[in-house]
Length: 165
Image (cartoon, rainbow, N blue to C red; front, side):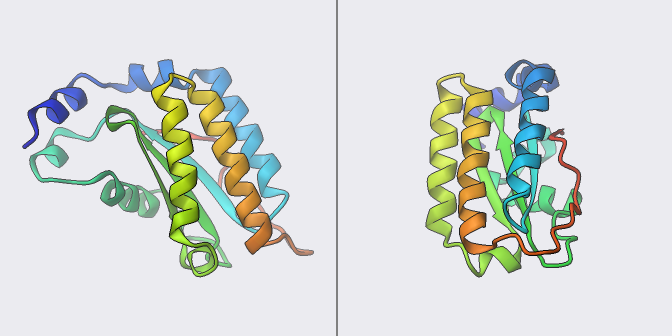
């Protein structure tokens, strides 16, 4: 077990998540999700986790693995067109993961998601959480508008409000 990582997770809590993403930032993120979803058929979920549960640190759980768990827990997969996209932020690791359901993953290359994750992570490392989230959502929206354009039927299937786990 990596002791530095363990301590970072031990001392990161929901209060840290609330400081990084205060109510005003959460409202701005929700508004951006609504705006972006009007441009494409994708469904966006934004989840922030301050730290992994201690039990998860005992085994080497990578942020990507946790993002996949959260993808299922939040039922991001539960859309008619398999068009859900989870943006998962793990604050203790300053990590961002994007998990796209199979309908979108088949059209958007992983390196495009990775570029968005890197840009968001850079903003977060600079302490610019709201800006990083909004810019990331806009970049994701542009990718989805290009690969998964809105049609005549564009139903909002998942909640737009960000989640702090």
